Length: 414
Image (cartoon, rainbow, N blue to C red; front, side):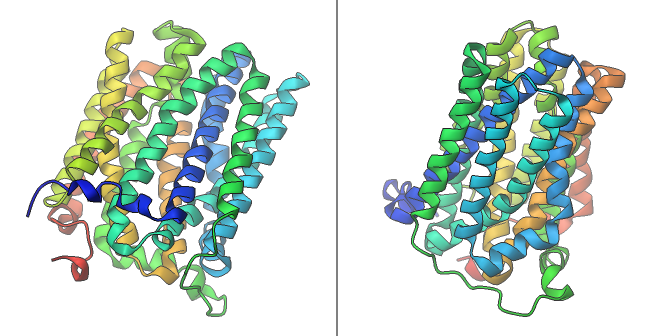
């Protein structure tokens, strides 16, 4: 079998108009989210110089997904993923309006900002499983792997564009940054609601304990999926450094507000390069081994960034970090969606969102709390080393996952 995809297959997902609108809606939503995150983080750090608050930004956005996990995925499975995704984007827009108001009125108090971000977390809790599950309903199954490559590239492109734009806009005016995010959210919601109602195998069984915990039951049963999700959870939980970038920008690398935006963009640049490679050379064999090696590489790049005091070294390290993380995301997302029955896909993605939230938002809280005690450099460098250890441990804890060669479920393999 050829190691490269035919030229005509690289844009297979875009042959479907529904996917085109879905793709741009996800990209715009991610971009607006990055603008808000960049501006809020830097504004709070500038006003308070409190690393603990930077950690709380992640925690308050994670808690709603944890608390609501039994209903967010079921809502997507029962009421329609397009509808839930669109309403969640509108709620994000409302939260951005609230943060804009706090900034304009000079009431940017931590308790008020964190309250707005907690409501933003509620929106994300519903948005994530609905948007992740919807893609299977807007492209044929045969084009799904191609769609995942483009979707992850859209998120990574947003990770480049959003922080860079957010940093520049915030430098010009915080009001301009937040109002731009509001406009982008509005455009994204319009795109989603313009989609025709997609085909979806709805959950019609009465709501009971079995339907509520269906996602947990499936993941626990499918050890390959459990291993892939939990690997990401612990690697990013221990090795995440995004929350501390304002400290590096302001106090360690001395690159200021615009530099903070580019530091946040660097992982996205590396990931975008990697997704272009993955579209050209898809993972066709030795998926488990590649997954473990990518997590180990992520940890090594994180450790290098942690100890670096030179911008010319720190930015490439972050780019390499993003490239390795992209491989992990690509493999994990294909496996989760293609190994999961459609009627329970929303609930599985809700559980996956908890793992992602724990690894990202809760990881940011862990980083902020540790940095407040041990300092940013030790926190990031030690986290990178821990991520390498996680990759080694998972090789033995989940032998079936580490030996998996194909991304598709067995019934889909040639």
